[in-house]
Length: 431
Image (cartoon, rainbow, N blue to C red):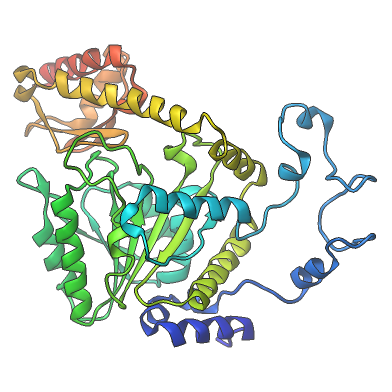
């Protein structure tokens, strides 16, 4: 396929800075670019002109965005920050603030370079854009065997990839040797690793020593000649409830680990700031010994993929999120919601101290996030338990045989004991 000269220009910048990153790009990733010529360039050149007949939006006679009063009256924000298109890269002020916040939340990143985040339509869209840029049909994506089910739609259905799973847990913790063996499974070359902590569905975050082990394994694999894309799904970042658990993203430690390791942090306001319907996510890149020019080229390719997919994320949502970040009450509000979720987590732990539950199920390791999982004893059917809970106990859970996923984030503390009592009763009926 003949590439557009603008794509070739970006590819040359990337290749000159990092052969590894260039080799990790998919065929679509090599072909994509953000168009700086044509209509977009002409629109940019006309910005600020008295008469501007370029942009594909409607304008009031006073030059403000055209809008309906019935909608405007519901929005306590300037029309210019709500109604017009946002850039495909995302709002510059939000991107800059989010990058600052990544550094603030992850002190181990101090002194390490990374790209400016690109705004996506939340994390699912972010994952899909990384699939577009880096995943070719038939590529294998290494992932723990307990993973968010939507990865299948994103990577398998969307890009023809295969999920190549390894065992997540051994002896109550992360199975590092299983990961090492998976990275060694085939000859050296392109590898894609997908990590998600706090993990959905288990609610498990790595211990600090486990993070060090994983980083060492990835570096060892890169030393052996593998070019590794590490996709870090940080959807539930910050919601860690125990001491000794790593509070920073593993992105912090992979950002400059090796010239053959491209770390991609996918995060956003969705769960961190409790705005699920706003759909504001971020993609951020880091690799050892990169250049500003290469990061800019990756940002342009990512923005090109966004433009060709959804054009841009919601301007209103981005504005509202940014407004929260600049609010004096924001830190206290975040702390309050964290404490509420932690109180529910603590209640789950307290309730499960009762030995009677072990007759029918046991908890998988959990310490963070929105979820925890229980594994049913052999012979119990998770789907039948789910149906019984719906029909007889007015209770909903997620069946993932032989596991049941429980979103304690969505259950009032006062109802948590009853939740487990209901599960216990349903198991007793089925045994």
